[in-house]
Length: 213
Image (cartoon, rainbow, N blue to C red; front, side, top):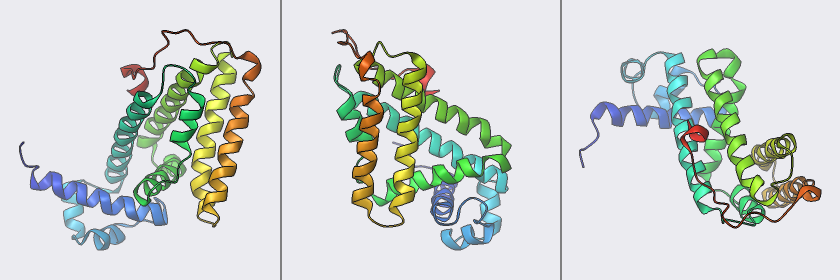
């Protein structure tokens, strides 16, 4: 395997430092000076390897979306062919590690800063919409008779709960927040219960280029 170029390594180091700063300070609170200090590199090297501030934000958003697609593929691959509700909640509502928590905080910061950076607004909107579509496919296995609007609303609710868990965890009581959020997610899924019917035996979840594009 070819060794990554020095430029590629430096780019990842800068994005790692940028990500850590954004998780703590948000997009607007993260200056080039802070990134340089966090990465141990001069500001001129930040521009050389990635570009100006807008290009750095774009690169961070692109990296997050790529990582999220990989996780979405893992989630789909982990789902059984039927009775997906409990495994889905197990996957979404777990006690995550510091690296995963940072990525969620970065996603929240990117969404919050999207109005200031039009170049990432469409990309983040597409990412959110695709994630909703993925959850709808999983939800549809257990609730195939629920109309598309109800499935989409529940999927949006699940995403909102997942992100809110991390925000509330920062206030303390992480375990109780996680448990309460999972119970709230269960109630959301149960709201589709009247529409539930037995899934087809051949129902199978697969990642698609359409969903992960």
